[in-house]
Length: 227
Ligand SMILES: Nc1ncnc2c1ncn2[C@@H]1O[C@H](COP(=O)(O)OP(=O)(O)OP(=O)(O)O)[C@@H](O)[C@H]1O
Ligand SMILES: [Mg+2]
Image 1 (cartoon, rainbow, N blue to C red):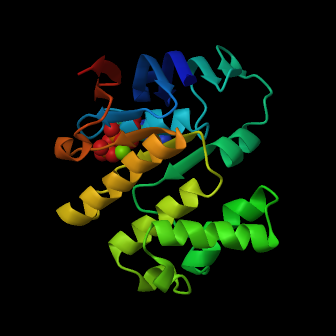
Image 2 (image 1 turned 180 degrees about the vertical axis):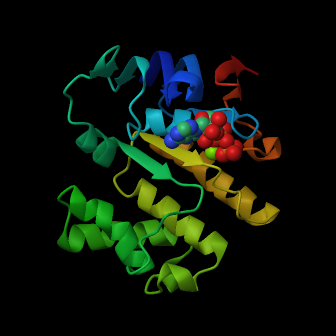
């Protein structure tokens, strides 16, 4: 079942002689339970595409349909509450985890639940389940700065999964990890896709990390090509 679709998505930054065409007429569709990899050299537009898909960055042109709703059309957002869609249906794992530094690991995972109105025992149970699943429970009361890179990344994944999103986006989730920890993170994302019927899109430089993915695409100068 298709969860997400973009048509003719274009993104330009700046104007005049400073104009950068970061994305050129991208078409992409992903279904629930599917693993999609985006590969491409530095500056090819990978992060820009992920930010557009996550509704954080406004495209210049094109169309975005999410879970059957048109979110963006040619001339702008359609009026659908994009913050809400993002909160409830999309999980984002940033390249440098972006955990909130003054909250503990546990509180970082709790936050998205609280923001969608899930509190008390129900929220606490969910947090426990997520920390267990990421094998990070024993570090739940630590501040992010006291965790290793791999531990921080696992907390970031737990946070992205908190609301059981339909779509999980991960920007170089293994870049700051060694090979075996990186492989573990990818294994977790694979499991999430298969078991929760979540669509997962991973941006990476490292092709070895995306073995067994359903779809591979390459970005080159803002254009998307199937592998
Ligand atoms: N806010 C911005 N303003 C102007 N240009 C930008 C902006 N963000 C990105 N760009 C440009 O758009 C192009 C694509 O950038 P993007 O960050 O998407 O690349 P990337 O594929 O993620 O690269 P990397 O692998 O290094 O992370 C680059 O030429 C970049 O300089
Ligand atoms: Mg990038």
